[in-house]
Length: 536
Image (cartoon, rainbow, N blue to C red; front, side, top):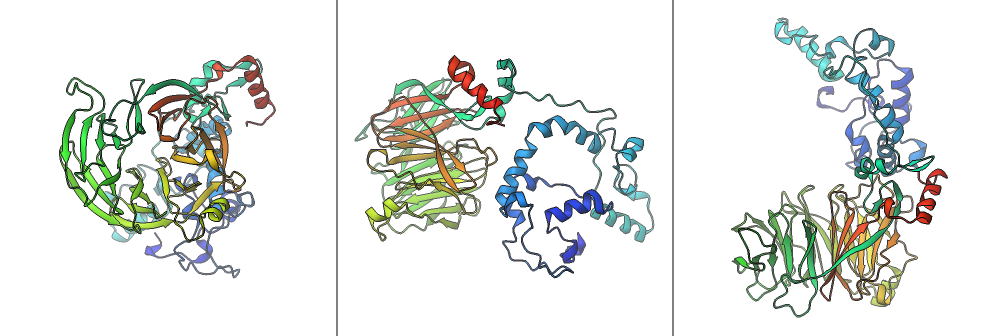
């Protein structure tokens, strides 16, 4: 496009308002469409590479995109609200009208003319046979028009598309419980289906960890998951391989890992059975290990501050890289996302480092500002150890817990939010671990992080994007755990189940409350909030 060069400054997309006015009323030849990035990628609105786009005839230097006033100059706010609008009931009710224009009966003919929906003839399917054009100049001219003006999609329907049925939970007579199943997929993590402004989680089952405990000095739970509704946990020096229902065990004198059976099956009937042993994976004892969700990758961290990346095919362990960047001390936490090709490592040096899984190279360091209480107690020079790191597999955000400072960073290392400075963790409520949910950023009501604390508390957190702070949404009321939480996992396709393990080996399953489980008073309060407009 444009011969591989930037167009003149006045023709570049540099102002949302000006582009809207041009395309909607001022210039009928100005045809634009919103690319998918408008709904998920704020980075494309910022000239972070400092390209020289030139100066307009009015003397304005083209740099970052000029946003509408409601975006308040924040590209992330613009994209977030734009996506919320796309997912809104209003758009759902009118989506069929857009489909009629692009793919339906209003694409061509009299209906297209009446709807002002006509374009250059060469952009329509079947209107040009390039193979039959013998004049090379004419052929190149038509190809250039198609490339610059785009192509109209194939017409899929010659009659009006049906209107989408928009389901709502609250009606004049109360709650429509039959509608809840349709609303579940669009409900943020740990929010009540039908009432997404409410976060309420209750303990549903309690068990004791028995797998992978042999040889441990304590009974701490290291990892856990659900198998056909049954809670399975493994010890502190173990990491689960979810697809194969096996687990790695690390920390032994062989400086390697062993693979064991986590759940009995027809092929492997004995739980804890050793399937393979891999010695000498590091020069010292392994301090932490983390398997990818698909089970194909394994990260191992050592007491000598090195991290190694392995591929595991069910039998052989193949070293891919040794990555170094921590300043002494042991590696304390690791996470990996094959969706975003990201590795994150944390150590006792307090550093959180991000690596590229594809090239196995260093990307960036996530910089923390400790809470005022931490800085005053520990002193400015002492490193605060990293306790937990966790990647959001929907948007690549990274939740970090360094000492008692909880933060959320985006995939490019920018600080998205930090826990509310008015909340000072001290004494028994200091967080011991943290985990990210897969909450998209446009679901502002959703829970983005869960923390476990040394007194057994489990707390759920959301983000106030306007102020850049992490706010407490819910504390699980039942005090099932009375010692430090050592393991957390978010489970379920709808991110509505929380698995918890503590230092004593006790485990619990917590489920998001459903509207039909509320008592009459609670349900009445939720309905009242909905009709007062506090929800929508």
